[in-house]
Image (cartoon, rainbow, N blue to C red):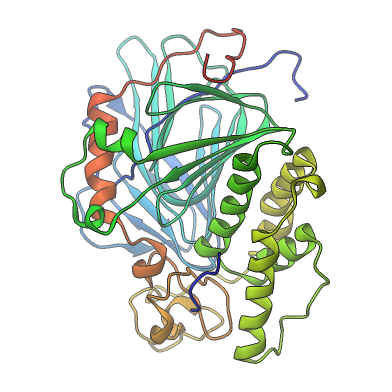
Amino acid sequence: MTLPKRLKASSITLVAITILTAALSGIMLSPSQAQSFSGTLVPTAGLVQILPRGSDAWVNVAEQRLVQEGDQIRTGSDGVAHLNIVTGIAVDIYPTSQVILNNLSMRDDSGEIFNLVQIVGTTYTNVTQTVRASDEVQITLPTAGVTVHGTQFFTYVDPDLNVGVISQEHAVEVQTADNRKFTVTPDNFIYIQFKISPSATVTLTCTPEFLRANTIPHYVIEPLNGDTSKIQALRNFLRSLVRSNLNPHLRVFLRSFVGLPAVPLDGLGANDDEEELQETLNAIETLPPEKVNLSDFLSQYRDFWGKTYKGALTDPMSPATCGNGKADAGETAANCPDDFSNPASCGNGICETNRPGLGESAISCPADCLPHEKLALSCSLVIRQRVHPPTPVPGGAPSGVGR
């Protein structure tokens, strides 16, 4: 398919995830009935913004600050941030991502309530605390509710609301909209495809029936040979990465994985750059299952996000005016790529976070990087109001596939 131009633990700990392929809006989804407390947001590079609860104005964050229940956080094309909760929960927020700190409070019985809503982008969650029976620790994706009992995992939501869940340590239990359960370990993953019709982008009412009808879960496990749906799901996932966050580091990673020779991207003209990208996409589309070791791929994926790409996200913190869509005094393409991105490329179907002359993100180019906000809002309300993720039994055995 061609895109448009432009475990080491001695016992497995489960994270129950109810996948309902939907999307979440930038609002507080449910009021807390407990006393709220604060977390800490640490911006580490580029453009990071916060929308405090009750405000309608996003504010750039250049230094550590407290965050509270109801606050929203988003990152630009080069932005990365670290959210830390004193009880032992940490979340890395990668470029062109948007999250909501939906609940952060203590119940009267001393149980903790933590719910982070991920609308779009990539996050890495590390839960080191021991979650008690009275605690409610959840990550709600634009397509999932995650009940956490101590683990490390990547969650990914692309602009078209497709979702990937990849574990780094321990197991992740995923329950889909049709009530099937899948156990994701560091050696497999799940990719949930969301079928969006043109009319759905303007639908203001989302229902559980709509979610079930438009959700296609793909459980990708070895062996990939003999089941074309599994290798095709991997191909779709790789293309989704290109569509959601096109940058030189990702392109190098993908070329290496599909067996293409390295190509220096610096200095390429527009035509050569496009030719290189199409070559990579063509190689993904024809990727043979016999050449894929799934466990190795997932290890490479985790290293890419946790080391290679993360290590390259070192741009200086953006000026206070960055992200308003215009070049203000003191801004440059180096310290505020979002405001210097060529607007002519916005709307081509690729969120180009780092391409010559382009620095797109959900902030600067929602048409490419966050195009389904209305659908996201409607379906998120269904998730929060009607769906209650199952509470896993501590120490319980992981479920089978669809059993």
